Length: 407
Ligand code: GCU
View 1 (cartoon, rainbow, N blue to C red):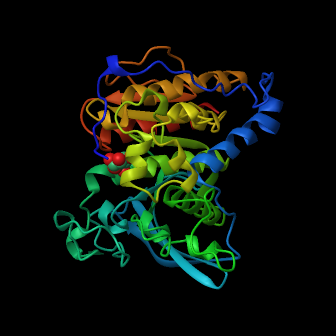
View 2: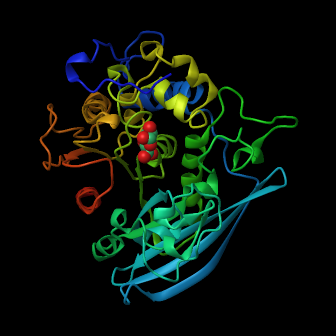
């Protein structure tokens, strides 16, 4: 299969979206009580069974160790903490390391962004005291990742995507974890990473309706919240899940599953994230399953080139976050992620948010670039490519201020 894709709006087919407010038996959801009791679980189960796979609950054992703390980080404006979280199930252990920057001037507990990263915690900032990851990662010489391991040269290589000082100056904490601590991003038949911790006797890979790698990353974000609940510096009513691209898909799925995330932010999450599949614009189900066979559950492959048969579409993923605020961001040149499809998911999730008594999405039409929409559902599109820029973070901070200061 080649990767030819449609990038022309005129070639988007006609499609009918499943209605988030109609039960599987064809009747209509009439109020919020039934949404939470019946329809929301129905939708969540469809996403589990057909797309992301079921994820397990907490492991049998979790231990947390603060491995470093520096109250004088970033020229004194922040406290840097590192925490090793060891999780054990079926006598197998896995460790994920959380890096946290806390603003020193801000009274504790503080609101906190949690976002996974692609190349190790040391890649987000030049700070020489961040522990260098020793996990497998994709080789990328330009980033100082040699023979699948981070070197000193990888410090801060992704700092343009992580404006730590800005986040701290605005009074928020930033937490991050290397996604590969939870599950390395390659198709090894699910032998490394967290999946084997939960195999039943004789099981060697997840069943057709069990989690893939995106499910595992989402699970890891949830386990980070288990840690935050023990950390007095962090306000557990103000934890924000943020993710870019594949990690944005994971942030949305984590937020859909776990109401402890007060706000969810998707940056250019595209196919399998915020974008509607039925538009078949840019990346499609068959593209994503072909290039990344380990991301979703096995059942999802049944929908290759059959998006209209899928019982859900991504506006329903957004609706699972309601009534909590959710922000979707697109980039004009990021056509592979289908910016319009990302906006339309927000728009078609709006009836659920409105039924639950929120303001929903305050516009009907997709805004122009650099005209951010602040409402319960937030949205912006900016000029430029698939990336996370300071511009994006600025808007996420505005969105968080808007909701947290207005509550
Ligand atoms: C690929 C993939 C996308 C994904 C992106 C990323 O382009 O096709 O689905 O979002 O990688 O994670 O950067």
